[in-house]
Image (cartoon, rainbow, N blue to C red; front, side):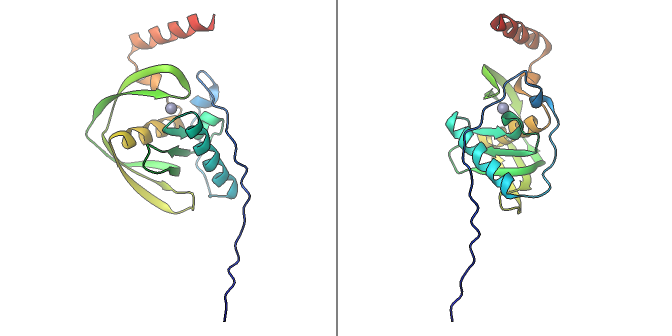
Length: 174
Ligand code: ZN
């Protein structure tokens, strides 16, 4: 007796997406939850991962490629993480590290964040998973979740530094 497994072939179109940069308004929206992991969502995961790698990022959120869905990818060199509807289940401790962002070019900001985080969400197969992250990975995931709520690294600046930042931006735009 033999079984023939029916393999569903989904043809993915892999492509590098363009990165939206501040002050693009998509970066300020509160993104919508994903209802189901469809082939389109899987394609978005793949393209976001490809885009992130191409631009030498270690994390990327959907609004950064112009999509207002709660989707993030991360890879700090220990394997790719792809999450839809990520939620922060638990955080612990804190430390300060300099962060950059593909959507806020040429800017590095020291940000205080928890150094441990438990993040839940759906993986690319639609399974509910939990990730226990610490150090850099915890930071990256929390940074990407900020994006889904319309928050950018510059929002972590105090008032004076924020004024200086916008002043610098204006000068650059001239
Ligand atoms: Zn970012």
